[in-house]
Length: 354
Image (tube, rainbow, N blue to C red; front, side, top):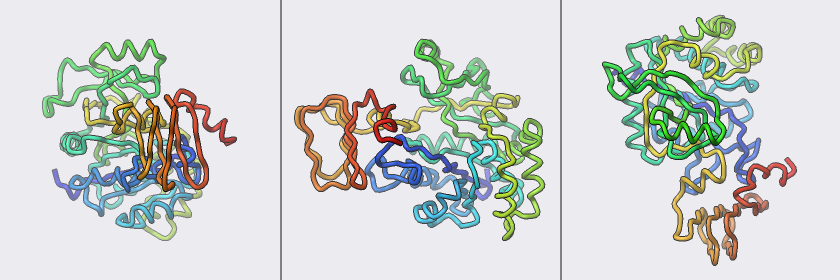
């Protein structure tokens, strides 16, 4: 596998504001330091691909509204590798745009596509899995998706059903996909957990550029035609104008619906490297280091008394003291304070008046 052909695409156009008051529609979660480690989620995403993809082969697809934030947080990414969507059209048009642009310069490109706002605890194992998957796709027509080993009956994730009876001859860790499943109810999730061939869908894909472009031509011909016709404009001063004019014509559709549920050569790499999409305060609590009372504290000077099962995120305050809470979120940002039951976090926007 030629590393010069390895390309990383980070999808960073989401408007996730579930970590209010830290995240808002103006500053969604991928651009904030959720873990209190000094790096934002998008910076951590790029960090874990060091040694896999060269800096010159990194692409960010984001909203035009976030262009300046991306440039500030990822100064090492070339400006013409920051692709700006004029409107939200889900993941399939995002992937189509960047794929056609990459192919225009490197028709041998091998691509990994990842969300910008997930966390990975075992970075070394993550790198091994991605490298192995990219070797598999470099010279094949395969589309590989990473499947996370389920550790609980999670109703917030989609699932992938795998055929684990026969591994691929060229990579014994990779198997064919039988089906993609929507987010289940609790009873269905519990049934999936009892079986060993259902995995969480992490939304991380590996393919070579010809495979994905050809798949789009077959299964999404109207969308493919839009980006095919823009070939003369990529890498020119007319590109953004033409994207602004034509991107809104794309169907609003995810790559799962557009390609993954239709194509034949779909494979899964079952993986376990401490993954979370970090979509809620509850998932932050689950995936962070806890004290003896099951509390997560992110901040320099936080004191807890008679408090358990809480998340306290206070990085801007000089001192925070909490007493007598059980199962709460305590979070502050820019003169805004949130105190909310973890079990009620789905109502945060209602409480905030957003």
